[in-house]
Image (cartoon, rainbow, N blue to C red; front, top):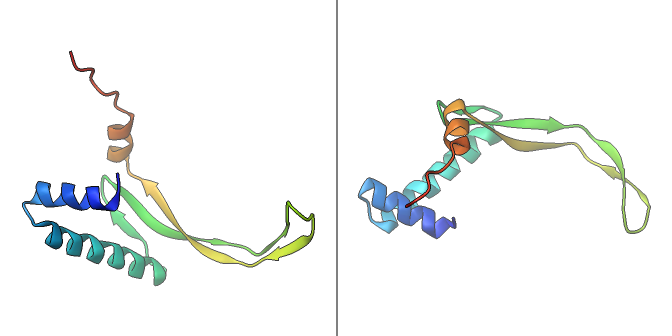
Length: 97
């Protein structure tokens, strides 16, 4: 599903125009990003939790040249799906007759 398809689905499901649904999606994504940037955790019960994970600095190797490189520490976003989402995804789809 593309962003445009998601906007169309949200618009249809919520009875909004595509322009309004686009604003809602942009606001949601900006809010999630701002929350994670502050180092907070965002939990959506039944759907999942967004958080950050700190990755320590480490030594690596360029696979093309074999040269040793230093990889800096980073903070990366992380998503852990909730129980309801896992169950929904793992439920087999019914075949159409």
